[in-house]
Image 1 (tube, rainbow, N blue to C red):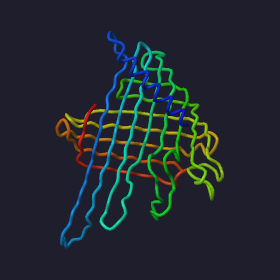
Image 2 (image 1 turned 180 degrees about the horizontal axis):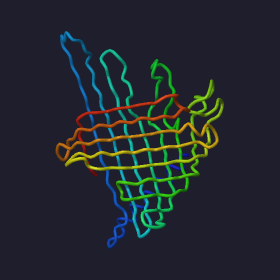
Image 3 (image 1 turned 30 degrees about the horizontal axis):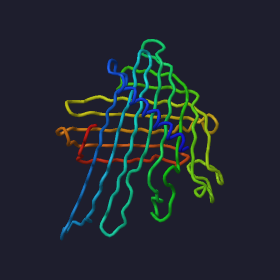
Image 4 (image 1 turned 60 degrees about the horizontal axis):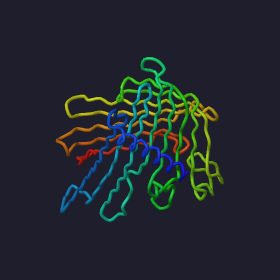
Length: 280
């Protein structure tokens, strides 16, 4: 799988080279945002109670897209990592994510495109059992999720698009030591991978509700034809950015996931705070 990652990096690097070598027509566009969110609380003789704590989150959201005639190729890297420290307790991880989304489209008619998509998700750091915080349940590239398949894309603009992929392959990979005693993230005991075939719907919608306030919605749905097709995996993400000035903003990030292979119920995450933003 390292070769897959190297290939993706090579492809994106080739795209950048095409942009810089073409002085007359700019087919590639690139933009990125680095975000730092921090929250700190301190108490001294505070009768209502409270514990000193500090939390921080780093995030990178980077787009590199290609347009040439009837061809569109949209790519997005998302990297985020967060920690929290409460006085008297060990430092705990609150966010950990590496994700690549790639969507290729060839115009069919009007706002419809023949498409092919690729999605990759994993994490950087070790994950501990949330109940006990005592034993490892995940680490880098374990689990790692891959989705890819052909389909049809409806694209109104870069900020509004929906992709339908009725023949989507999904591969889940984990290290063998996580399945020694039982299944892990849907991978059976003793195995290191799980293959699924199903249907995927991926939607993206970004808009401004007022000046300097943007709302970004991402919805991913997946149904596995091979097992319990009625159990649809859901991954919904909401990002609200309220700009204060060029470098400061108030950010709200919300995510909810339903995947009964990992957990039988909804997983939710919310991060809010004043952040430092830098565009590149």
